[in-house]
Length: 133
Image 1 (cartoon, one colour):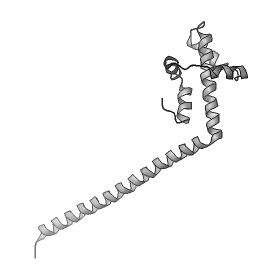
Image 2 (tube, one colour):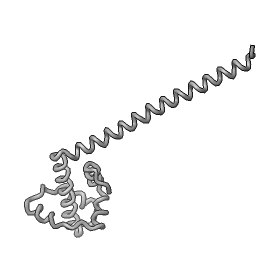
Image 3 (cartoon, rainbow, N blue to C red):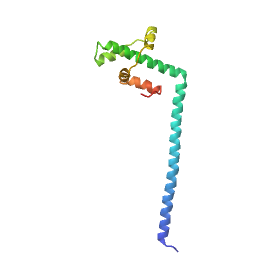
Image 4 (spheres, rainbow, N blue to C red):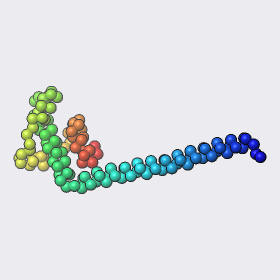
């Protein structure tokens, strides 16, 4: 009664509307999934930081690394090559009680902090402790 043009227009409109509705449903599903993943990541990080043993271990690693770099830097003023610095850093012994007392008085200046940021290991420890640079 209305002709083939009306049928074509009806079918085209129905297909476009169906794609639009399915696209909206898929977008909502993906958005909710990504939001849940973000919340899960934040909760895992918070839980990890609340775990005292993990936090203590990472903080100890940070202190030992900073102290080691400080000692190497003091010794490397005589030996200025990067190879010598890396050799000194790799050959450091565990901190002694005297080192811990000295480390408590260590002042981290902006220049020294920038120097520390040059080490990939330092950045990794900061990320694990959720400390921004």
